[in-house]
Length: 483
Image (cartoon, rainbow, N blue to C red; front, top):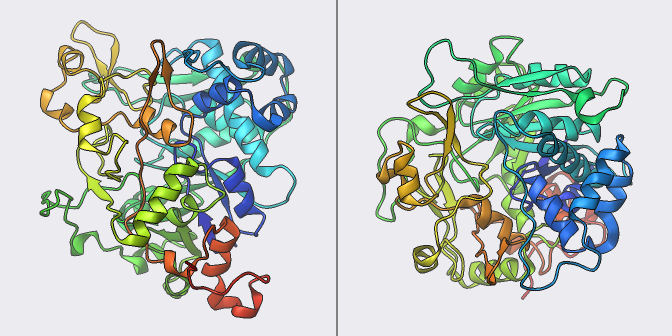
């Protein structure tokens, strides 16, 4: 069993190149499954440099569906500077046929490319919070042979059943949480694979499900019943990048405005080990010593995100990555755990870097807009029916939909910001270009042990160096960051 899982970092930081590079080392490479429909459409509109997307589309098992997407979005040579990008339709409770097809194909493409040319294990990471896209996204990843599905930001109680259903290409339903729903109301999103693709396919291999949780108690809750039991767990602490769980008990903030975590938030590893399922520890684990300690506590290994995000193989925009590394080197890099930044309500790690919406000045002048909508919350309208709202949308719209103005204070548009961070920013008429938003983990202690311009393979070598010793580093430089 692999000792290292490369964390799924959205949007597009954990892209197919990074997952492939990690999987080729014998560890588990993971692509982020969030907003892949937007990434696919924009890669095609920017000309698909290298032809990789088109190569994967040619392998899709329903050629007519793939050809339709290519016709809609591909721009030979790339879209002209200043021209607005063609939008991608938002998911809904009854999504249009093309909306679901695009999600299926986009997840297929990302996993196909990550798995192409090697026999290593590849997983795909989703957020339970983004329920509307889940059935189509998971199905696309399964069509490409995903080995693992990882899911956090909520408890994936329905996902074991969903994986079983989709493996047989059977019609699937996933319950959708609707704020204010009345007892007895049924809200769900459905997927009919054979109707959607128009082809009959042999049964699929079911991927293993790893639930990303913040405590052994939550893991025990999932493991108690075979209908909700995953195949393993990733236990994530509060210093991990992206979203993290709120502290248990009353919320207290420190002088920087970050939530304070206490003894109740310390993982109960013996309780987790007693469940008898494999688990990996995540959040501040990126050292050989932490890997050894995790194994000693009964874990299969560790999940690492930030070290891979800062490697040359990640999807981060090159300029942003180099700025982050320079700031880390001179001691000026700050990573906030902001309780207001994410529309999900979970604390979110954010770098207040100049030129990004983590910078209060940039945030203040950016026009509030929700045109991607992955983190929208479904809510029951007073007159019936379901609407959608997001704290990052214009304040007046959010309040008109029944939301509280207080919820909008400090709320960032994560969808647009994170897509911009991987070099595919929203472009609108009039020359508007979306600013990026950067997230990282708060533990950067691994950096002095990695060479300049380090790769994903360098990260793996460093983490496994306690096992194999210095002579096993494939001729690479010994630990010690060169300047």
